[in-house]
Length: 301
Length: 301
Image (cartoon, rainbow over all chains, first blue to last red; front, side):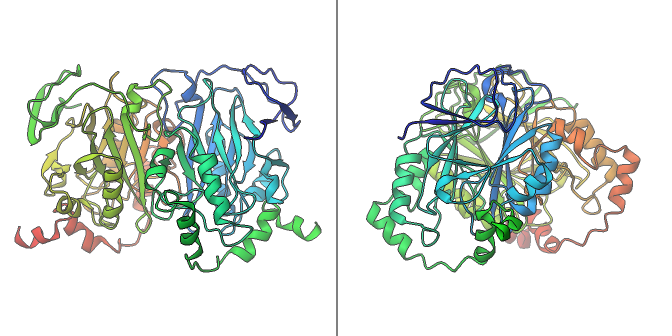
């Protein structure tokens, strides 16, 4: 593990959590007063929570959203325990930005980040449109992706929304810049942990490794060192599913993933012989996604 | 509310819960020893749970599964606290039975019931194929549907899987026989409650009311009396979604459902003017679903 670094979304906040850290990066994008008040008001809008009213699991609002054409999952997370209900969208899609923003508004959330797990080749990220429609929203992608964004993150960074955070884990292999975002580890973070694996680990599958700096060797090591080392009850939420699955766990994939349960040589052989077609959206999506969906920027960059 | 009646899946069990009931219906289909041991073994395979190890929320395994062609959601629920991990499938689809049975097997569950919320018009239920592939599985549908099944249920019945149960609420209007299955109310049942609303209440929508004994007046009253009276944090999981939503809550739908938030006259007018096309699968699906997918039975019935 590299030393942990921290990405915060405000300056001058009242920081009540008890994490220790090595390097702090403070980004004055928003000025959200942090607190630890965790009582819920209107409903427990999280998908699941605990039976203890006002407890930590109820802080997390979580929604899984689907874009049918590219079979892409977008995830909405928010800290309901924070007065501003700060929220993030992971892997938004251009075609469903309207739906997502309506939901954000209806749930009374304040969207602060639009985050991508990687530069997608099969759809255009919603990040650019989101930023246009809601100027306060900041885009996030990994530094290793070499794509443009308001904030670039590296392995070990933590992206805070309220008192909850997502830890960044570098999981290259599908692309060079792929990361997995994992909910925090600690008594004041949701349990079980949740891993947004992008295309690194899919449910009973994984992303292809034959373009954009992909490497089957690297992907194998990424999944085994960064995802399969998480607690077995960690929930796996990928960027896509093509068979109608919505969630898995680390424990399940360690037992039943037909590719990643094999030894490295067999895995490499499987990946080298997939004979997949060239992605039909690739020549449009990749250039757009390198500037986080802000296509107009690409002509002036 | 009608008096509650109870549907149990075993005789001679050790019943440790504290529910009182008026009429007990015991069905000797299975002989599962009931107990209240709730420690989990392999992972917390529920979509969400609490941070307290071994607590009640962790008993419920929950999976949402999607069939893309008809945009149908199937739900898998199991009591992980029970040694046999008894499980039910709500609204299985014929085309995805293989996927669902593989998942049931991988998770080490014992599927006991295949339940339908109603006689579907847009796809063929997976119930018949499931029963063929796993003879111990019993089919369930409402008595009001007039469809054939191993067990027919009525408003107020409780369908037990292990120590967890689904309460049957009659919610006619999309069809005459529509029911909503709601997870149990009580300290030893998952919190928040979960309502499987079929086509009665969709996320920001509702099912059509122009065939199969449908009635907009009845649907309006069903939703308001049987679903909107549940706690606001009750999770809404419908049989379909066409916009990529996966879950809502009673509180959200009471505020934002564009149809059901209107007064009854306006709702009726909306439903009368939808001008929807005749469902392309209806003439195949409805006859098959009246015998719970056992098409061969229909020729001999």
